[in-house]
Structures are given as structure tokens and as C-alpha cells.
Length: 83
Image (cartoon, rainbow, N blue to C red; front, side, top):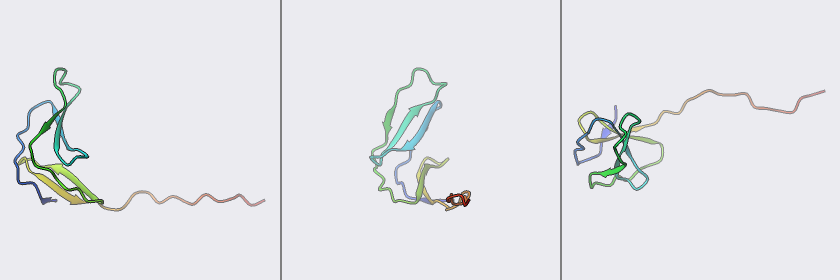
């Protein structure tokens, strides 16, 4: 679970994908199924982003942040072949 950081409630519309842009504002972009929609800025609140955190809009409409886990697949180092 994340920590609630947003104070402004975002009202969602069907057919849009919501995300926090580089400027810190919440944006709504139309999904492929929404042919007539256009990209638009939603809300007035700006979020200061920190590195290593994931930002998302929860079901209740507020912005949350969660620490990203370090993980992934560890790969072998490529070295020179011995002859």
C-alpha cells in the first residue's frame, strides 16, 4: 500500500488513463477505445516527485506514492572467452 499525499480529489471519467506528468500535475489521456477524447490536465494540485517512488491515483481519487522495490533478474557478467 502507498501513502496518501494528494489533497485534491480527482473525478474519473470512463475511457481515460490517468497519470502524474513531468510537471507534477495529474493528466488524463484517452484510451484507444475513446476515439473522440483529447489529452487534458486534471486538477490544480502539483506533486513534488522523489526518485525511487511510484505515483498513482487510487480508487478514491487521491494521489498516492509507494516505494519501488529493487529486484529483477540478476544476469551473469559477460567476460572475454579464454582460449
